[in-house]
Length: 76
Image (cartoon, rainbow, N blue to C red; front, side, top):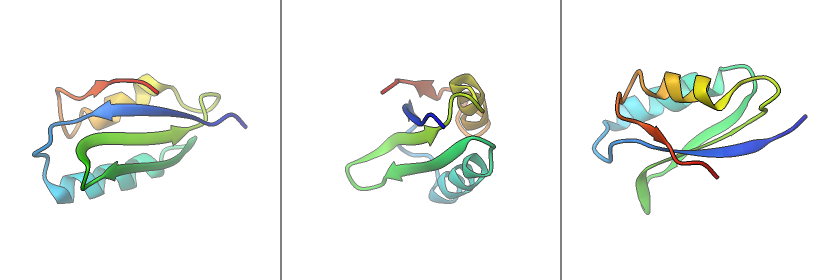
């Protein structure tokens, strides 16, 4: 199993309930190990740890864009 991280920038004012819903749905995606925000230091930074053999970064970004259409993958 390979594990890699990506950083996705979302709008800092994205609602807290949407953030929670987003991370829960991402974590249900096959291949995603965890998805989390650093609420205090960088509320716009979503870090997702995943297995690139099971899910592609673009698939993760597409799911995030259901909540924020301007979300952008920054990388890690």
